[in-house]
Amino acid sequence: MQRSLLLFENSIHSSETKRVYMWALNRFMKFYKIRDYDSLVGMDQNISAANFSQIIIRNHIQDYERIKSYSIPKSLS
Image (cartoon, rainbow, N blue to C red):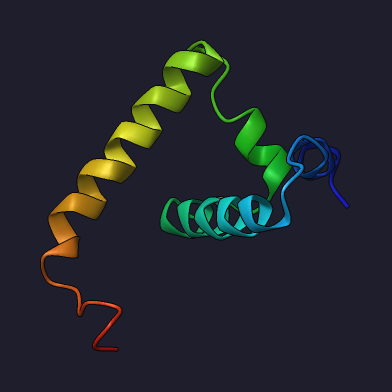
């Protein structure tokens, strides 16, 4: 197991929270075509990690907001 994933999972104590966070993280990585968890940690050395994370997360939320109106609600799927 990759060290970054191990540290992430060990920091979460609730199994339900861990399940939801892992689902969201994997979806995020798939959306941005990120191969592994260690790559996510060191994606861009030119921008501070906090700023880089904020940029990507903000972009991801904006994309999600844009496409969610076209999605079938979970209750109907």
